[in-house]
Length: 205
Ligand code: SF4
Image (cartoon, rainbow, N blue to C red; front, side, top):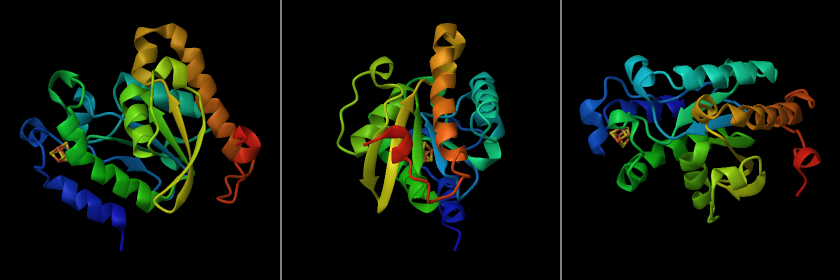
């Protein structure tokens, strides 16, 4: 059974919140179904809604270029969002939308079983850390922190970083964004991408 396909089939017909009404396409996520790293953003934007693919607009271009610079191929990671349908005018996700949609994301994580979840921006960071019972204060304070956590039968590292869109509006954030992704890439590639990598060597406890 391909669990990701099963979850995507549910999303395809989903009407659990009002966002289905205006969507052109749902945006499930894409990448390696066995990826060691899952990137989680907040919701699809206009380009993503048009295409059904995650992070393909200008913020997606920044993410792809930064991954490449860090020696990671986009197809080797998995990229998705909390919400699978676009909120109108790219407004922030509403709590009830997150509540309705987030079981799909959790199902994706349980299926992929990554070593690292990278939270892109404040909404994803806040949502993921709260799943673990942790408080999130602000992305500028918490970015680059590495949380060693366990849930869903997985030992995981959770790393909040800036959303790539933020680097478009505030270019001074780009260096932090690139450094954080480089650090995550280094810890995996220097151990040959083995799923037995001891990440503690990089991040400590
Ligand atoms: S955003 Fe999520 S919960 Fe809402 S309709 Fe789309 S798939 Fe369903």
